[in-house]
Length: 246
Length: 226
Image (cartoon, rainbow over all chains, first blue to last red; front, side, top):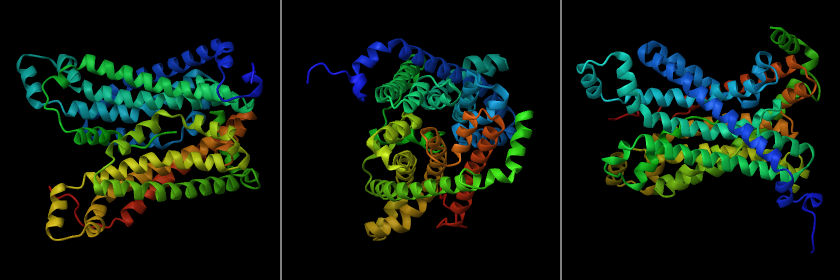
């Protein structure tokens, strides 16, 4: 077959589509990254104080964890819709919804990380005259960092996927292209945008993994390498017990 | 809030509950899709996961499938399937997507549940002369039960949520009330639909928690030995 126009033929894979709509794709990708990035950053900023409150006042831990778990069970379309009266059709609606989802894993992981700080380290810091704030910033948070970053990785990957649902209010990044592609039956647009979503999720995960290694070199330094299986099962345990919002 | 009192009005108008586009019909669609797909996903995933857990192989698969499931946007899969030739067969794309997204939590949790059974208990059972089958049915399965049920619960929540999103790909279910509300720029209807969906998701989760406790093979006995 000679030169055949894949746009006219509505093929799934179409180089011409990527060439002619590169601007549209770039804009959507940037919007996707911006929404995901803002959600995760705000999520961490909200989850950290919540985790600290839950640790400081034990009786508040159950309600905080309970509420964030309940939020996690609400389907994403319903979550965004319930926020509609408060935010209107806006990007802040999508970001707020995504922040609420991110809290479940972030609060849980940060709390677990803080609780795992060895009492010895805390005592030693206190003995050296550290005040509570300095203790938190210089001892507890760095020691809780691996758990925090593990939570951030899980959250980021699922947030990249969930951002697509923002298409319902026209702020879904690549999701908006996917939904438009359904209306126009434009196969190349749907497949390209979907593939970009997955690539974004993987790229974000790898980037955060690199950051994790960079920021917490001590987690690898003097640990006896556990067996292949036990390590994987251990890693899975922390992620498997929560549901996925869709 | 106007939208909230509007949503209350919408929910208390009996016309909105009747007929093809009414709440009852949409709810029936939603429950039908969700129930069938959860059952199919359980039939596929649980035997595989329990068997792999029993023989102790395939851990990487069971764990990684969860990570893959997290990275793939549900909406994209729904819409991609709708645009394939499968889309001409009505509900088929939705049913496939629902099963696909229900499998990872089932597989991962059931597998981990089986592997987390205390090895010394398994060895004691073997030492008592239990066969592989007895070990599976009388020791491993009852001890793995809580995590298996966690998987079922996650999968159910997932299925209810995915069935809601199916409305964006043009399918029925309660999500349709929300998407129709968006199309009509009718915020009260959007909020009312979202309230119903959220309520359904929480109810399903609650019912499964209770069912899980009721059917617990070790109900009233202590599972923790250490």
